[in-house]
Length: 552
Image (cartoon, rainbow, N blue to C red; front, top):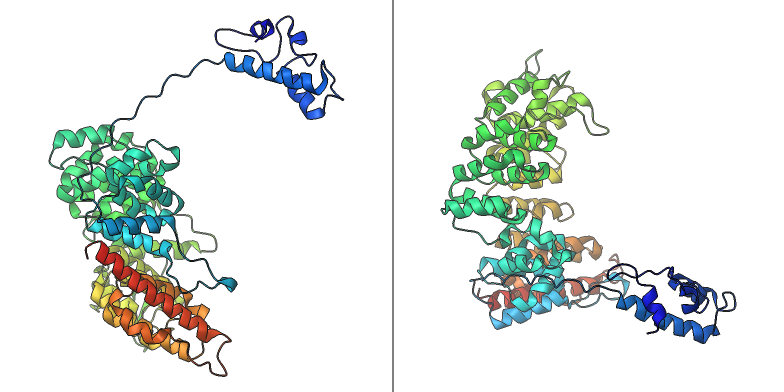
């Protein structure tokens, strides 16, 4: 390098790109500086002439490149990460390891022309189920597949709970080394390395020093064994936590919620965060014996009563609140309604959903839940009242009220009793026992078909019971034989691929043949239905193989 390069140095280990040192103009062949060279290269040496023309420009660019590089100060060596924690879970069987690699590679068959999915199973849709099963069986993730597993969880938020639980402590360790995997540090409680819940010193140290995901997992683990100790742990740092963290910590109290949590939740009603206050109020209203539930019962009773006026049968009269006072707001009633919603109906709904359901029997003449739901409601308040009772039944996990509000599965929609909202019915079903839930949905499908059953199927235990599985397959076969549009049932077919018992595959073989098409059938529907049933059978057989590979 010539001497002109040294003249451009500026400070210890630094360089000046401006060519401000004496002689820089000559050292740059007339182009003046590195920026001048770049400008001449972009505009052309004819418009920005210099010594040597194009060849001189390239020579000067080479000299300036060496000069710039020589002035760099080497960066300090990064600190090597600590050793990855040990994962004592047993390793996967070799066949299951190969299957996981295949699922992560997403080697599903490409869609056929026209948007048809083809007959090959969709491997991407089977990955969540595989991860859940592997975690339940207690296997650890292969180290060589952890990067692909974290990439899959980054791309699909629905995979994260299962993926992070399966990745375990090594997955969390690895996530700290790649900014793209930082989501695991806030969303992976299942992947934290936890001390024994009875080791108070270790628990305290992790609570004070751990990452957020570790602290969430720790709180859940301690609460599972010692609910009071978990509550004291949370209370010890409550005022120092960020609002969003307080909200998530508070939400973790849903599991194992009891009357012992009431004093802590009552204090949280005065929290500076509106969302924290609302969550605390919701949790308290799920405790029918809490003071807040009692206050809400009094307020709701002042709005809902028996109306015996006239000779007509008894009905329910409603007088919605005229204001949302400070006491109501402290107990979690949001004063401002959503767009398009009236204030009074908004306040009424919040009061009724927070009141203990058991209080209505005494308030409404000793009637049972089913009798109360069947009563007429004056002045068209019925839908609002029933919707609030639905939310209360879900919040309080009250199966008796859920059955009353669900109504009979075979009843036509639009009756006075119960709710016809599929979203509300799905939530109510979640409060029932798994067997009762499956029986109700199977009866609903037998009475009404599959057109409105998608949401209801989503809350049923996987794999579906034999009766529910038969009801779904029979309804699909009826739809096929009726010449219905096959793509209208693609959502239910996709659910069946993931939720039917794999043992049902042999019974479905007869449906994989192309049926004769009637004159009124949709063109090409027969081949589509056959293709869909072929994919269903193939997916069930693949799920059976996956289960066997994992030792099931």
